[in-house]
Length: 199
Image (cartoon, rainbow, N blue to C red):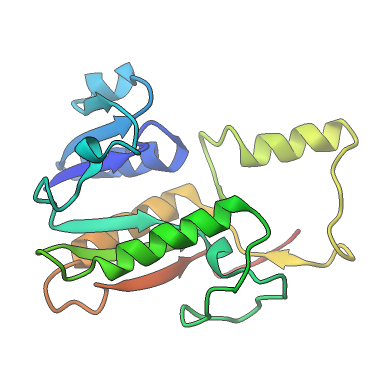
């Protein structure tokens, strides 16, 4: 299979790229910078901006399957979201731009399913962590060492997290199951370990 991974040099993207290479897929990445180690491993690197339609026009370039990396934050409405499923609705308002723009993109991706030969799905991994993480766990540790780590709520709040290898594997499974007539096409999926941790 030929695969394009946007953000392929990033934390989750790099893990997806590695898994694609391991199974023998032809991989191209679109990223802001160059990643010589990936290029040396056989990845074709394209430097560019994801906002450039000439670089990412899926239908125009004949892409048949699209897996969008979303976030559970697209449905966060300020309440405790314990035990919900993918039918939970988008909120009327968002508290910041990140979930608002991710929800907008997710809606576009799902609406594009079945149009002009494109099959789509969206995955919602939450708090991805693991080897190579330069943001989530290092920032938590840095704030803890600086005495600036705040407890949210009463300290018993639980949150879903996703190990990076599992999030990457979910992307491969999603793309493999995006076939005509598949139940995956046009759907969104929460991705987690199924074992919430105390926040």
